[in-house]
Length: 288
Image (cartoon, rainbow, N blue to C red; front, side):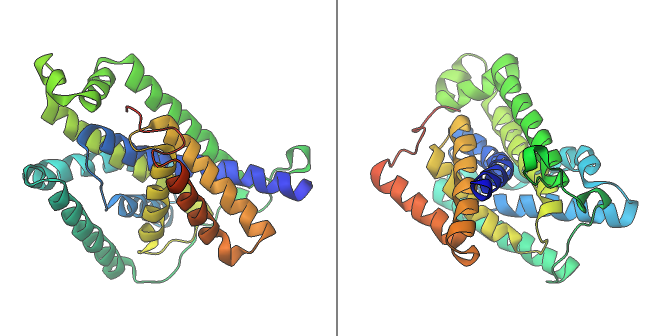
């Protein structure tokens, strides 16, 4: 029973970070109706940003999130303004292929800059886990979970309590009607893409102390992200949260009770079952 609870807790903590990655993608899809194939590389850039800040400046990764989140937001604005905005009129397939090419470009530039070596972030407070109720909880993962929870709450408040957030939701529901009501749809699309990129970068910073870093880590994270988004329902933020936690818990239990080598495969089996019996996702195709 203790092993089961331990696996469950680890799955929930990691799932919150998975959910953050998926929320960035689902917000962009909900508003712009595009799938960003380079989303995982944005997470990778956040991870390497945290690593570089610690090595160069001695900055704790969880402090460097204050640097890299705005930097990733600015990167998202630049990508949308100078690249995607010119491609989007050509249709969704063009955007899909373009972002796939962007993904390869970023990953290969990272390979040139950092080489293919695996790296880790060592933190002095990570040596001994907390043990609430006898359950071992790595301190970096607990901190990351708390920050992810705070960012998720802030995102939800932004989308529901601010005029800009309401404009984003209105654009996601019906861009033509939103434009007729005075919403600057191109500006909202640019802001949304930047927000999704910032969420991906922030999730990368939070994941960095718990995962190995290498330039192509974005590939597996992209796959997990797409699985989560489909599990929860395309365009649904609550669905992304539920899907992220569900996938992580299934992987964690699978690693313990089946095999570590099969944990990713178990997650994909869950994905296929949901597609088979509930194609709209657990939460259904919801509005952003």
